[in-house]
Image 1 (cartoon, rainbow, N blue to C red):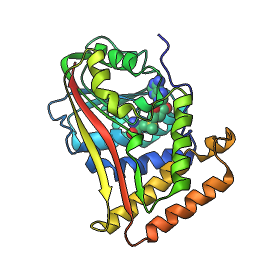
Image 2 (cartoon, rainbow, N blue to C red):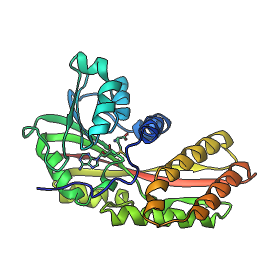
Image 3 (cartoon, protein in one colour):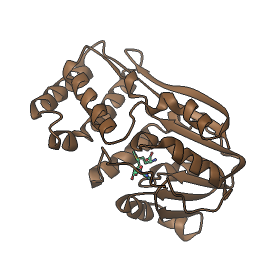
Image 4 (cartoon, helix red, strand yellow):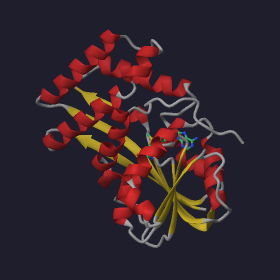
Length: 271
Ligand SMILES: C[S@@+](CC[C@H](N)C(=O)[O-])C[C@H]1O[C@@H](n2cnc3c(N)ncnc32)[C@H](O)[C@@H]1O
């Protein structure tokens, strides 16, 4: 079965790889506050990227042996450098491979962690079925995914909203799904998982949390710009729109009453 992303919106530059480490650290509390792998011994991290979440998993659940897999040679190479000591002591194994054809035996793992991944693939249910195959019965999975329709900014920022439309539209045309978070309940159920629950991971910052609002706007600026090279190249956006968006984002950081809202979705289910 050929199940892979048609293209990868963010690319694999050193800057983008560095953004993944910053992203994992910045969002750690939100992503991990409900995740409990304390009873896990053998975990599969699908689309482990540069190993940013692997490092957090090791810190929070030091008893787990982790297998990470990613389809990108560049990501796996960087992850291997980053996690060298855990690889050397046998706690982490990293493999280059496609999540649609996992190179593991049936029931090899008791848990799986998937984060910011299913938005990039064209057949998420096939991948979830494949993950279920390698999980033992009642093995646990946590998936944390985007729901880009929830993005809201005040003051009104039309250039940023236009850019955001093209960012998501481009990802959709690459075969991905920037709204996959809302569909996790259906997809996990269709893939055969049981006891599926979902939780909205809301990021809502206003005058009550000016420091966190500023940090989120800085983080979000980097996320938006991570797609700029591809969006310019495919002529989805103009240099002018990017400049206007940058100006709006700077104004938002200075505005006295700005509001940022976004929600991701986290699903938990049993194999
Ligand atoms: C946004 S990154 C997230 C990485 C990591 N989960 C994190 O949170 O830092 C998405 C990753 O999915 C990987 N990827 C895309 N399609 C894949 C596939 N079919 N199989 C395995 N990995 C894939 C990309 O190479 C990239 O490293």
